[in-house]
Image 1 (tube, rainbow, N blue to C red):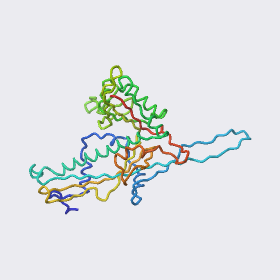
Image 2: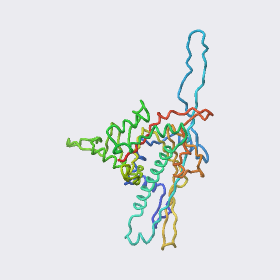
Image 3: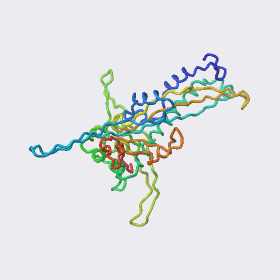
Image 4: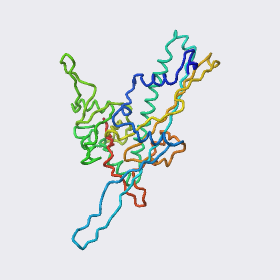
Length: 357
């Protein structure tokens, strides 16, 4: 669209979109970029082949089992069928607008609008998408009901009441064993607050990866491992401030509780979906002496392996972050029968460690 203008400059929405994607991200938003979050062709096929679709259910085969009888020539062999599960996946959309005044351009001697607005958009998009992922995690750990609590309790390792309440050499191994038993090797990375990482560094429990440069000098990389799992440091993970309580010998001083998430590769699916006009410009020549507004819209599809989004408390076609955080909207995948058979929670490589640092 060569005649579209922004601040008297040609504006091509497609080219601008590619520019935004190429702008360096300054904020970490490491969950968003980690191997725990992967794209999904299945989600693309689901939501681009249906008109007006915002929610879908993916069928899954249940774990195979059999009724074993004694083969002794007098015992009948009884047959059973297979179990089919369904997992709810969903889409959501977000939008925002940024306004640039003509006067700002004039008084700064023509600061490049594309660089300024593009940088802002790139940072905002990442922050919004990371917040969505954190809301999803809060929601699945807020599930209620006996079967769902097997996941919530089994995949939560809270050491904050014990001793100093800080992570130790055995913390990670114990947490993932509690969550998944013999399948603990499915966990590949931990995302933690810098305070937790600092404590691990002080105890020399983090091992930083190294590389050797062209001169044969070995240097540390900014990537660490903890018990063989990749460590990602991101201060956007949950931190809860706990006020002082009690008195005398039972007094508990004020402290912070940090959540460290541990994931397996690909446990969360996030797939961008097309929108009619992701970027759009509007010119207002009157307000503030003249200004231009950039509107941005986008949609993503999300799914969590082994956990179904049920949208029981969702009021529109796109869930809010608060609705994603509501445990009533999530449930362990099951067959939907009156006496339901549930997906084995130990097969879901997500757990959290709660500590004082």
